[in-house]
Image (cartoon, rainbow, N blue to C red; front, side, top):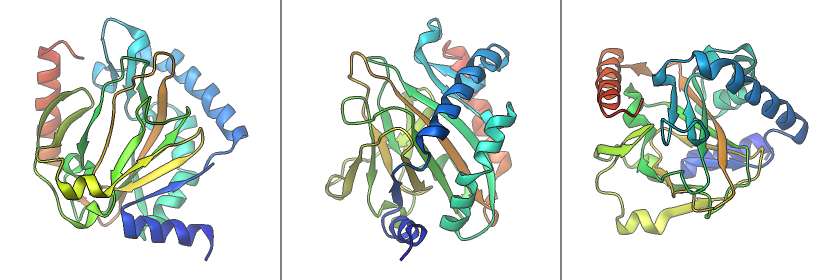
Length: 251
């Protein structure tokens, strides 16, 4: 069995797969250089709904950047390269690149990511989509590694409700069952390692309790071409959320 076949089998069985060194050290040097350039050139021009901070008054608390591929040709090319080819293998069809995101949990500031299913946000039928998460730092329990509930992609959509976590507005209302705890897998990572999960897979992350280490990553979202988005419902949800965040002074 080749490496891709093993990844596909793990993804289909568990709802997620971990691929070490998906991007090599040379590629990471380039990505880091381009990321620094993107922040310098583009962040001052982006809408507040595209850039989130743990504390909007402190730029060093940068938490999330949305849709980087729409703003910069390097990140468009990055998304359309190895990540897209892997997404097509895992989803078994041509894919639509939807979002390339930057994530960070700054030292002692990065809050917990609530347990959720990405499909709840995506509003797709069928929910044939996936998210990739590529580490830019060493990631472990201290600074908030990703935790997956193995096999949860097979058990349907769980009820979600509103959270107070910027960038993750909905969380699973009844998370913490015996089955959740028994099947949760802690996924540590090194720079360049890639985690991939199906849109129905339950996942979460703890806060960053490290006094010195960030937890930076790039995220890639792909929809299978067979997936149909309820665009009207999604836009209504997005508008309502942005109105709430603006009123609360979060964006």
